[in-house]
Each structure stands twice: as C-alpha cells, then as structure tokens.
Length: 113
Image 1 (cartoon, rainbow, N blue to C red):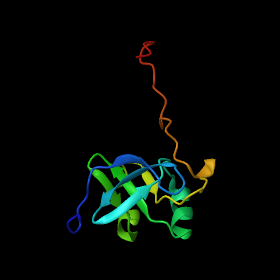
Image 2 (image 1 turned 30 degrees about the vertical axis):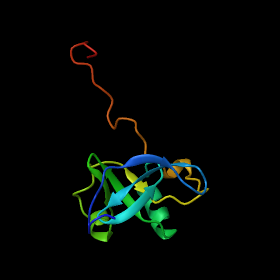
Image 3 (image 1 turned 90 degrees about the vertical axis):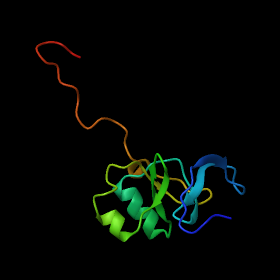
Image 4 (image 1 turned 180 degrees about the horizontal axis):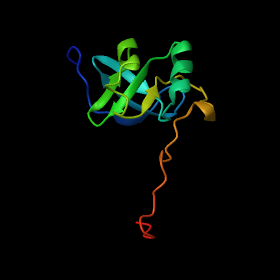
C-alpha cells in the first residue's frame, strides 16, 4: 500500500497480459504503467483523445500530466512525455519524439570541437 500522492521510483517490468516492456511506478498516488516510446506533441494529443493518461519522466519518477501541466511551461524540458500502456497499441513514427539535436554544432575558426 502506498500513501496518498506518493511518487515512487520507476522500474522496468513486463506487462502481465501482453508481455511488453513497460515502466511501472506510482505517479502522485496513481499506479502508472507507461510505454517506453517518448511522444511528440501530436502523439500526446492522440493518446489523450484515445483516453490514455500521459506522464512526464523525471529522475525522481513519473509526473501525471493534467491540462494545466500540458498547457504550462514548467514541464516542457523536464523529460520525455510517455503514454499510459495499452496492450498491442502501436505508436506511429510521426507521433514519436525525435532524439536528434535541434542545432548542429558549429565549427569556430576551423576547429570542429
């Protein structure tokens, strides 16, 4: 039993029904099982429309994303956005967050580093 509004460290587990790897932990009192694939803004919208909860992954655990947190800027750079797990759900490539840097490194005076 966990206390009210507790956030616990996450663990990588397998989902008991489908066997998919998921992150499991308590997020502010809610038991959360989330997929490992980070979402971009479109992916989060699709997940919410499908009735799934979304979470931000931080070094302390998962943070549940409600309307105020989605619209605000406090969690914008806190970590990747992950959706609640639903068995056999496929996340299209155009809804996945990219991990490429936003700006290419610039060479200064011919020195590339």
